[in-house]
Length: 298
Image (tube, rainbow, N blue to C red; front, side, top):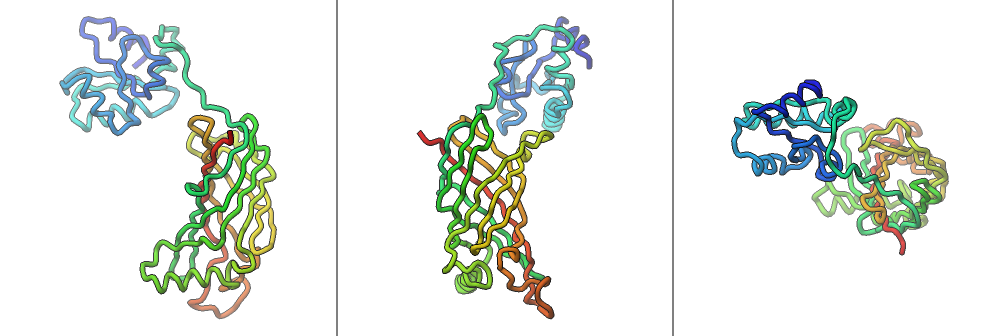
């Protein structure tokens, strides 16, 4: 359906119900005249539409952003599957309508993502690092806490960042037997792995955060590089992260990496360094998922 075809439909005596399926703030900013709003991204999508019309035989045209966004197509598929019998998608959406020189309603102001600036203190209650360790026949997973950290940004660009990890806070989540669980934690805390009695903390100090130009919303937007100290050994590591904020006052960062523990002196069970390990082999790499929340300092 072209913009002109939709315009003709809307100007007819039997005009369809025109539904924009984007969030409310976009609807308020930009919409085709005569539209109503039901956001396909929300679980209440069907309830929102039912509040507009209870007749599933109503002729409906749905549209969204256009430009390759799947919003209208997905909305049409959902409605057809739910029993709405006369649904079409205007795939060109706002982009095609505007490009055709046709009028839009709304205040024209789509809210921009707030800029991150200032010093942020890590929320140690909400921040954690999830870990997965593997051996030849099994794997275990859990988390570890931070004792603190500070991140400084200017116009969403990293100025400095430092995170301190509490190595004595290691938790295993997949072993229900408390005795075996405790045995594994003691094993991890021993000099076989992290030698926690001698090195109670680990530390990451950032050197740079390079923007990923080709990123999409929901994917990593920076490559973080810095010095990581574990068991008293410091190595430079880098990994992709996603940094976002809803209001500029609280920062959330997530990153995933595989860390080679043997580079930091944790050599227990390494098939690269020992022979005839059999069932005692342990993968060199630990999979880590960082989730950091930090609050703007007043």
